[in-house]
Amino acid sequence: MIAKIHALQGRKVLALCDKNLLGKRFEAGKLQLDLTSQFYKGDVISEKELLEILKDIYTVNAVGRKSIAVLAKFAVISKKNVCRIKGIPYANVILEF
Image (cartoon, rainbow, N blue to C red; front, side, top):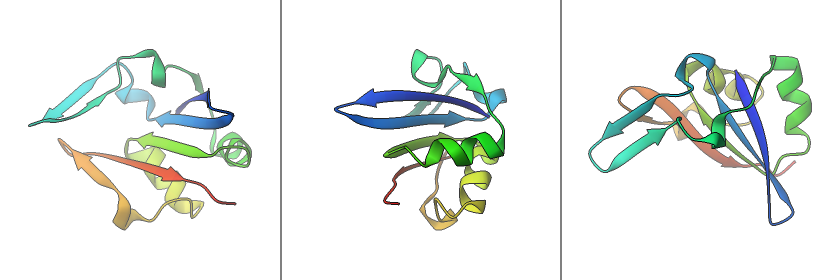
């Protein structure tokens, strides 16, 4: 997984995506997942590192099967709240730990 932390109005936003999706773009009608911008270009992280990062994050934008599965495993998201564009799962969540 690739992770990048952004600071936005004093809160931290995590952009998380599967490594194999970085640099790609998926469209379905007016909807799109654009992983070509700098927003998702970060560092490769492990599940353990992700768990530590999540302790200080306000919002997560996640894209990809592995990223979504790991967040579900950690009970950060529910799979019923996952959307798809061109078969690619994505979710946005506000954390309240």
